[in-house]
Image (cartoon, rainbow, N blue to C red):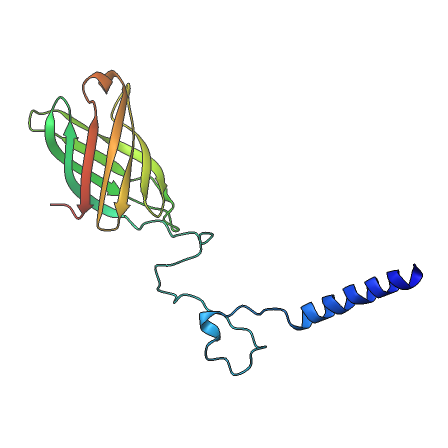
Length: 172
């Protein structure tokens, strides 16, 4: 019985050693020009490549300056939208001096200061259009154009409803 156990142990050891020596090596496209099959390889996208690691944090948009375009409201129809964006040094926050202004042909208007945050895909803000009229909104897009929505709360919420905007850099 002792001899049988020893033969089984030796057989297993032999199979393991053959398995380790003859283990399959996976081939990768970048290995094609490798002179030595035991040398590794690596690859990375170009620094300017749009492909990036999901862990990489994208920089916030640089939206500072004046942006203008259209605003639409259920009750007032189409009008003009103007945003003045001031950002902190890392572009992540809208700071003092940032404003919004909406004007419609029927003389309806809302304007005031705002503050908020900026991401790689847009911005979010909170503002004040006067006593009892708080405003919040967000826009998405890129450095060439942003579209978004605005919500009015308080006394002006019955006047301004379902407000959307579309803006681009530069003011008339």
